Image 1 (tube, rainbow, N blue to C red):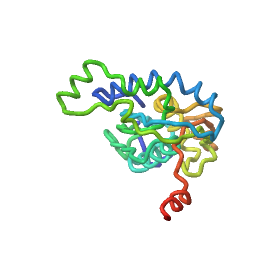
Image 2 (image 1 turned 135 degrees about the horizontal axis):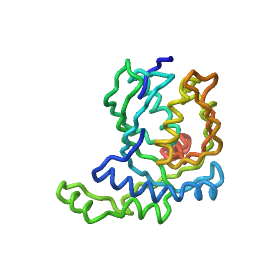
Image 3 (image 1 turned 90 degrees about the horizontal axis):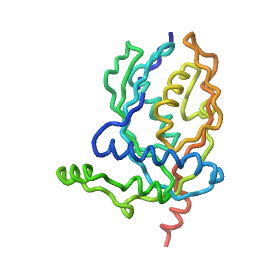
Length: 227
């Protein structure tokens, strides 16, 4: 049995953010496949951020993680799949000597700024409006959503060095595939995961298309600053 350092399975939490994200997840999920096929790889599209609060539970059978290692591994994977750098991971019931762990994941990830997605992100129930009014929390409208350029990029879990995955991470990737990837703008390209409770011989073989925010061109920013 391997010991590395991480733990979480994903459901939406209740509350304004959670209920809103749950509604948005069902709506935007319908667009992920169509949008990924419609937009050529690396072609720039307009996107907006979708906030979600997810509970992820990791259950290890062949690989155990320390809490800090699991947190680092989750951060590297979710960031590569498009999560904003505001990503926060709160560990609960996380014991370094146990193969089980739970994390509350608060993240923002890109979704295509389609009319349907924007409507899903800004359509509030009467209950949500009442709760927001009582708490004094403003509910963003369509004009308040931050818009930015993004593109669909192919990401191989077995070849991506930033993720730092090895053969022992197969269970983690398999559980993320079930619990969190369906909630992101991610389209599966090929799934050759073969996780064994007796150990694995090579890194997880999974390839996806993920909607990722485009990084600003440093040279363009520098040139714009020069009078």
